[in-house]
Length: 183
Image 1: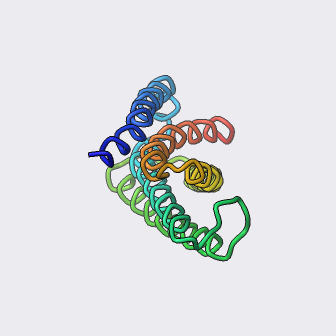
Image 2: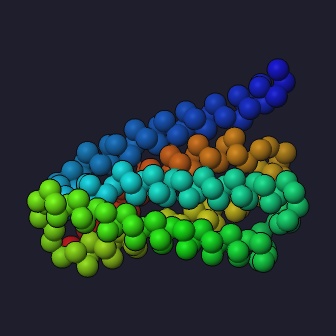
């Protein structure tokens, strides 16, 4: 029962924050619907892009926590071979997943008659959004995992729901910012 209470105490606040971030994300999308509707292929790809970023960050959080618990990375921010291997592996995974997502998105868009304006610019925006999020969230998760681990808390209980919501919030926000900048 004590373990249940610990998980509940560590998770409840972050779940409430995650729910609020979801509301904020929906608000940002609804406030910028003209921008999103101007490029319908983005609307088609956005749910998968949200999922991709959140899923990769969940895997990263889990790997970081495991490394900290088994001692394969020290609980301080520093370069390590293990961390570099995880970074490169997840970067390759996200790039390959992104490639498949873009190809499928464009195939579905073309087959359903979406008007695809300047596909190379759209691909650039999607890649910039995803890589920016990946690099920023990698650093954020590394620092946060180490901090929570040192505080005696399980980073999985806090960071997994938080980073999923954060990715769901930041993905459309960055997409809209890059669309405004480039189009």
